[in-house]
Image (cartoon, rainbow over all chains, first blue to last red; front, side, top):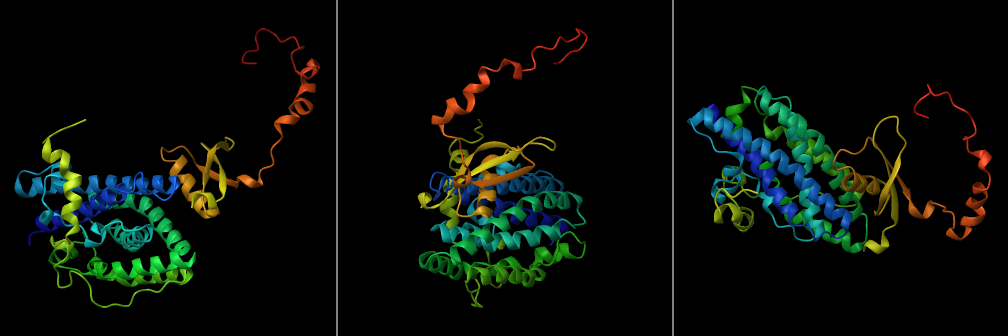
Length: 260
Length: 94
């Protein structure tokens, strides 16, 4: 795999994951349990959308340098089919109840933060700059989802049970965040990206500290979705992504190039 | 659910050197979440450098019924207003 191709793939993984999760969080608008939470979820979604735009914009530049012609951030977001998306399977999982949304966010935010911190030291200045900007936002996201997991876990019997159930249900989708493949390896030596495998231990430690306070248990299952390098990062998705994209891409597909 | 959460009054300092200003209120389960909610509800457009939250129940307010007793006497004491000092024309912005 050439360095250009690997870089393009990495940027799609980062950008697609942000955009898909932003879309999921946007689904809460008007449905949040309370007004304050409604705004907060939308706000976090917008942070991620902003980051996703930067990653996909850069992906288009890299594609242009690589192939002679690159797509814009909008073309990448709205005109690719599901199989061309490189987001984590975790973030395409449906919102479910509030516990499910928060468990998904909790798993993702802490991994996201660790990943961005390594990318902020990338030898590619463009990547380092975007990551450094995103770290500030994601630090807040991670604090917020941890706060919620503690309150839900250490809350009522019902909130505790639902949150544990959500953590268990989403656990098999967390594995691919820490599995390096040919893309990571192609970028590793040049110091452009880090080995995601090194993030797993600090991620588990961060989770454990929060779950102890939340009186919740870290799931122990070993089996992971997308193991063997066939997960969202390689374009293998759950049935949920297609449904999400039909809604997200509807306007540009129906009225190509529409602007407002 | 929202009715079980206490109400919090939110004060934001928009820049260093200025006082915190009351901007509104919101519901949150506890003080940490009140700060985070205030951040999301009231500082999304870069409005602040500092947030105070106070439980609404902890604020003691004057009663509208006491308005006359509290504020009326001030009206009849014009000498409390510094309007009787002749100011030189050169002094501006007073």
